[in-house]
Amino acid sequence: MEILKKPLLTEKATQLTEKLNRYTFKVDHRANKLQIKGAIEKMYGVNIVAVNTSKYVGKLKSRNTKAGIVSGRAATYKKAIVTLKDGEVIDFYSNI
Image 1 (cartoon, rainbow, N blue to C red):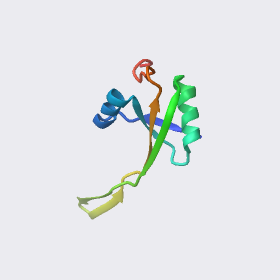
Image 2: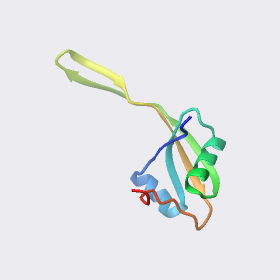
Image 3: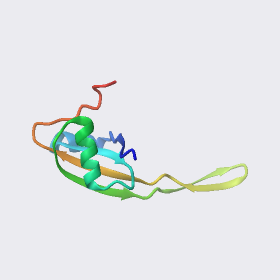
Image 4: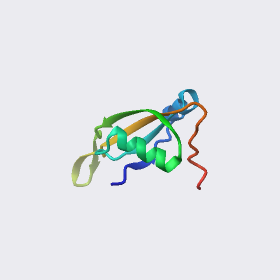
């Protein structure tokens, strides 16, 4: 099971990183906090102090087409916010 999907790089997540040394990831919805912690420590080689998770339900979306109104739902996802030890960082752009 691929636990880490991708890092979330939004304005709010960047502010958390700069001020509180917290990083945000999109993770598999079946993963628990221990699995997330192990995957991040293994992938980035850092020590994690805390893991906070939250599930987001996709918004209902609709649009007008020739055939009428088409409605659907955006994808649901699980977000993990991890707090690292002081002095440790994760560089997302090092392997580009």
